[in-house]
Image (cartoon, each protein chain N blue to C red):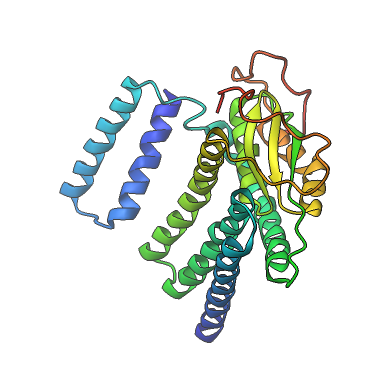
Length: 173
Length: 117
């Protein structure tokens, strides 16, 4: 129910910002379409903690600035590699352990890896991410596990969403 | 103030353009498909991101800048997904990443991985 309400609110704000109309008729038409969409989403059973992770919102705003800084840093690294005449790349395929307790956390981790240039997640097998790294530095940076720890700390919770195996112990939630 | 905002905006747009060009060069120069995805990653993140943030400074605080923010957010959410889809399609199609370092812990290949994603 909370997820449905929140989804409706987000959809309505999105509609409002994209339309830019503030007349009563149009506002109520927008409201009606939002209600219809939430109803359809409810019937499709896609309103849940994965499609609409409101429990992460606060901590996500702590995670994103850090991720942005990482993205900028690795962008500069990869750009330097590309424009060098000899292109000192050493592509490798490495395996990284993902300590997240939920599939949503794993998705966030995999997407974070892919968003930072120099590393791309190409496959996942339970809690092992198969990552293609462009340079040795990128691979080593990922293997320090800093990003993994950050994501795990962000999704750390005791809620009902943990996967079947026991979740990560604590974390800095 | 106006001048300062303009300067920041143009700086960001120029930086973004440089990264777009570098990413494009990377897509052409890098040796194999998986390495080229890293070049495309530059275009997706800092290239498009910096240009769009620069445009937000041009637009000022109004409904246009909100739409630009939404574009940035949607790019950041969708581009890893497309990259995963591309990588999986390539793996399933039999393309193997060209690896230079000695493969101490290379995966056994596409056949064994679970179909979880």
